[in-house]
Length: 325
Image (cartoon, rainbow, N blue to C red; front, side, top):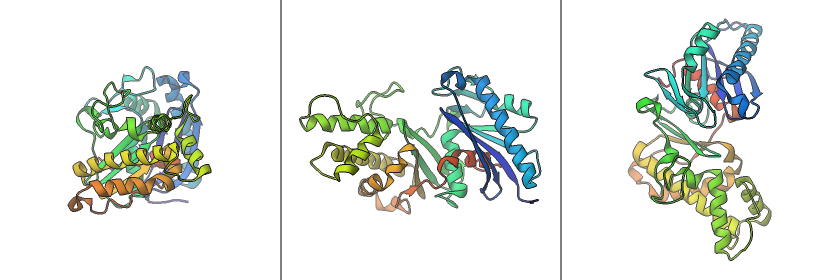
């Protein structure tokens, strides 16, 4: 299938695996693969690099079968701070030893073609703006809700990276100054109130407020949502109160971001998206109540991420084709 449409390879590195896609110039996934990463040892620079090379070979073979002219440019999304001035990945959480590593240069030399790297959340928002829930929108805020709160921001079609690649970290503004201790060393960060572990902590507070004793009977955000689904939404139930409070915190945080950015669309993705039908409406209500009508614009309703597990890979391919620069 020979095509004149430009194409690219996109790879998305996560803590547990790598997702890879052959993507055409319209953002369509022509081939998708993924590989697991084994524990911490599999997250070392050399080990991840080997996996990336394997996946590029697999995508190249698929491109050849489809009649897509190769070699194709490559984009790689990796968690962490990417300093575009020096080309170094300064630091990557949960990846030991990834400090001041020239990942793009190493892969470019090894693969013999241009490779660019991008923060994984930046890649995700590029994907959703190119071919997903925010298609056609140049001003987009995307949050990924899971173990933490990741964020990617587009303004005028360009990624917000900030100085030294450390910008657009929406998870770490202070929602409650002096509040819960965050892994970043500060207190009260948005991430400590709108992530999965944050919901569990909020549920524990509601549990003890209810007069319960002993350990909280759940250990994950998913279990909090599942327990409430079994009993139904009940204002007198600790799980329901926790979810409402957590949704309020999510909406309040979004309101602050909307006042700063005035986006045209807000996209929500990440591991907690399975509970979308439960938290989207109360979060939207909190956001609407706290956002000035003059800047609310078209941000509501909130948009559920559309590309699923391929978002980061599609966005990495978009970056390889020059989107978001």
